[in-house]
Image (tube, rainbow, N blue to C red):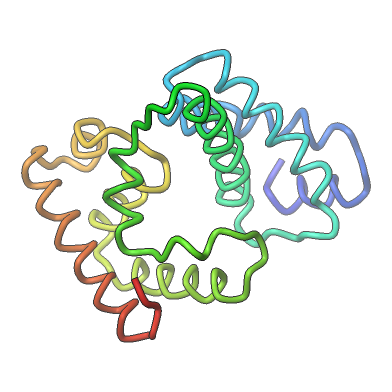
Length: 184
């Protein structure tokens, strides 16, 4: 079943939509959650919570890019889980988020915030103008939370080349954000 048909099933409140989504995207969702949490049980819980969230949010939401929508939902659940975990332990493992979030102001963390939507648009435009290999590396590292080693292997770069490439991309994106009056 293609994504449009799955979304239509959500709109019709057909419970098969959840099963088809799990079958088609469950592995990807689990991978994203596991890369952040490093715990299989927590990752599975995030996937289940994200599927429930998809059920509850479609409709009214009508995502244009269904897989990206699902990844966003599962990432939010994973970050919520990390917040709960780190609140208890007061230990934070933020290797990926520190690299990327140095470009994004911390005040933009609410869902549906118009400024957050504007920032998302700027980042999407930035990525559209990148070479395919660079865009894939950026997405694997910062959106899918792949380790630097795994992301660099998947795009065929050495770790040091990938690290340098990502640093240049972050600097370029930061400059664009500053030009668009997104203050860091």
